[in-house]
Image (cartoon, rainbow, N blue to C red):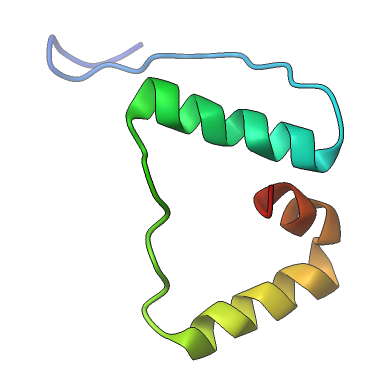
Length: 69
């Protein structure tokens, strides 16, 4: 991979199985364990949050289900 001593790319391959909620939970656990993510960042506006939820509900319901784990 191109880069220098302070610029590199780490490639990971994950295989997660289960329901969308189980996969979402596993991704959240990975974020916590590997990256120290302890909470989600809030939306800048409640209007944006609702619009995003409605968009995901209409266009990507499986992904929305996974994100609500």
